[in-house]
Length: 480
Image (cartoon, rainbow, N blue to C red):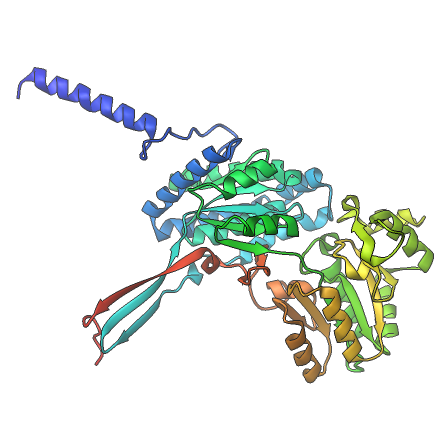
């Protein structure tokens, strides 16, 4: 071959490579990684295109990369817990600042690739293997209440299953979401070379939500939010995993063997955590017969502040909007007070409390708005039931069939069983705080997306997979 021909060939090859690099492997424009904006996009199409590239990169890297990325995210949540927690609190202005880092540290207990165990079968006719395969690109919608913890937990579950993800976060927590996504992407790229595995919309809107949900390259939706966004997602026609609302009751049985101070501590621990923002948190107390006074006294001993009727009424008029006078059927929550500190709520009623107070309590009947509404405030109503049957009836009615969470304190095995069967909730905690149901003080694991509406329950890597079967007929069944 002549030198002239060799030079011409080299020129052609160089030109072709340059064109491929400018268009990317799929003939689409290469996604540029902007400094400080890695994985952060203004446009839904760009975000999905980038995430599709991230998914394909992850597929080529294999299972080892999944484990590596999960470990990266968990370590970053621990290392950045204070900083990300402070930034989230300053942006959202809800919850308790001191509890924000704890939620990020809890991400260590989210399940990873180890949870995806293939199922093998062998018999007279050969062998079969069922394996968990990724969907591809997932769209995740995250709430204002736990912006970065939900994002981080979803990343772990989804990437462990082999997927990439585009987030449309709540607008009130979008800035901290963008910051965390950029930093996570930078760390993933530094250690694995994968870019844009995790993407987010910088300024999320209803339009960006609709564009993402209808995008042809989006394979699965994961929605953690209010009823409106859950309903919208389920109408898209795409496979949707939806975490809906909850209004978890806690029943205190009339049982002399109970340690009521422990009961009170458990309720304050769960119901007071992050000012009651957890969807699983105790939202109303139903105490049976003599346990009512014992529970009330123990709550006060453990630091809760009891409001009188006038103080409760003043707070109620401020935190609820009543369309037709005063009545629970017409109560609409004033979102301004969601996650407010107890001392801030108390000031409405003219009380000056120390900021260290974790819980307000008030005596109400079963029809009170604080019982019937998922208010997400550290003000728990306590209702007296004449017997266990009435307590269970109140608990079931006030939970509204959301099948989310319920708690009970009792030493009566029969009643523990009865309530579990009657409530039929996704999470049911006996003799502990609500957080024990997510592995914090109880056995198990954590997730910030609890798919009650669509029934998957506490999400895991398995939630974000589709099962594929491979069968070989009449061979490799080595045991006869």
